[in-house]
Image 1 (tube, rainbow, N blue to C red):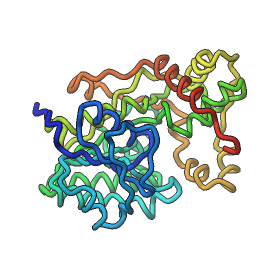
Image 2: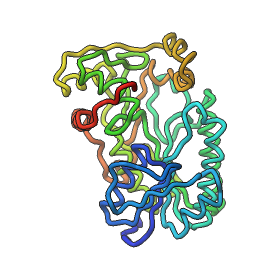
Image 3: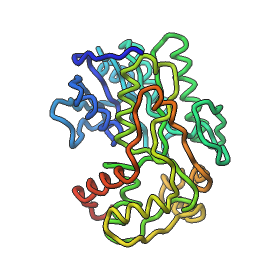
Length: 320
């Protein structure tokens, strides 16, 4: 198993969301030279050593320029959820071409959409791509592009797949669950409250992606990021209220309400086809990663506690 310990090499992270910033922090803690790239050129709460670069990554020349000399490139950027079909493929292509030009390893953030509805069967890396949704088929095609480039010797690629996120800085779960719990208000899950579900803690995802970038043995493969044992959403929300010091006030949003919400919110509309993840058991087997690299998932109670602490320190903005 080859591990790169050179601290002088340049690591470029596309995307300054919670995962991208988490990757940058992990790399900076290892003494790496880190550049994080987004459109605005601004990103809060990063180590002083991290360079923040603003550019339009859809432009191939821009992507090549900001990645020149990079040893590893991390693709954690994505368009708005309702713009995936139109904008995600050209974004990935631009970053893929930049990685090829730099002769850099490419570590790609993915989700589990490519597998489609497994009807409750646990998700492993050996499952075939069987997507039936529009975004699932898109994800599958993008994976095929990456693997074809790797197999052709164009670029060295590894892919990390995570389940639904929770953790500091992740706005979606914060606004649906954590901020309401802190305020003693109703926190809503999606779909069924009582089916087992795997959640990925964002800092674990960042740490695992850095591990993939370090090990040549990870290249050319898809890896499930370590998740704590699955639990029901009712259990997850109950633990959240306990950590917030509030009595549990739990609700759920079903497909009908999502359809109504989709009339006004494009992201809600795009979520409708993915509701199968929330109405049946959705359990991710990440044991292969742990066996290969030794990383264990953060226990759910600990992850919830850290997320609650982050939300306390970053009060919800009015109007959101």
